[in-house]
Amino acid sequence: MESLPQILQELFNSVAGSGAIPYLLMIALGSLLIAGFALTFAGAATWVERKVSADIQARVGPTTVGPHRVGPYAFFQWVADGLKFVLKEDIIPEMADRPLFLMAPIVVCSGALATFAVLPFADGLVMSDLKLGLLYIIGVSSLITLGIMMGGWGSGNKWSLLGGMRSAAQIVSYEVPMALSVMSVALVAGTLNVSEVVRAQSPISWFIFHNPFLFLNFFIFFTAGLAETNRTPFDIPEAESELVQGYNTEYSGMRFAVFFAGEYIEIYLMCALAAILFFGGWHLPFVDASGFSPPLKTMVELLTLMTKALLFFLVIVWLRWTLPRYRVDQLMNLCWKYLTPFAFANLLGTAAWVLFFKGKSLMEVLFS
Image: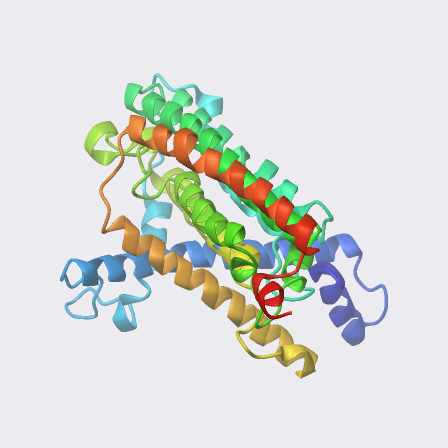
């Protein structure tokens, strides 16, 4: 299948003639489109979170009532917040390590955005269809940990340092069960290519129902994903009631906004990966879109994957306003005493299933 830069180049060449624009410019254009989508999602997600949290707590939330209206249902509140961040003063503490302090938000956001290079939005709609895409995502997303540590250390603030240390311990720990659950999916799919993982599924055959081990692995993956993104009940790196704001306490203006955007971009990545690895990715449930015209097929697949990711995001918001925050010891106990051993057991169980049943699903085994 063609990648997104190749599709853009063919589209342009059909209008302007062959070879009109170098391939590198197509890569740059594709990167801008993906960055625009990711940043737009990060902004719109804040509005969704505020509206859902208001409904859960029986509050009004962003509203069109009053003199400060910002669009229908106050949808453009996130645009107003973005403009506010641009206009706010960028303060650098006197005791801060200036290079680390300035670079930390960029590293966090770059690590989150770089993972989109191998994330397919639809069949063929991907920047780079790497054969080792799953390993790439696991490796590049680790940059986020580095950025958070840089921000915590470089701020010259004890609360920020504690938040950075907590985040490093938490994210590095929960990468283990997450990686093991991803490898279980790779065993069944027979590939580390993200697009091929989706193609190994179908509208009526998703990996979450493939065998009992992958069913359990989804919950391990989702729990580890909550910890990787510092979401409640695993938000101890920020922990406003204990650490003021954790690693970003000293940040203001656009640098704080970039930290914020990086977090929501990573949340979309985790939600999209959950849909891709376990819920059929771009496959519409019970509908085979292969017979659709190419533009319609791409649009249906794009909307299907985004809808699944949005549903997972709503679950994450619901959990934030439902569950209390874990203590640090509870957090580590959950990872090393429960999730990691179960993830190892599921990996071995999945390998045994693939070996003895030749990769067949549970339904095929029961009714064959």
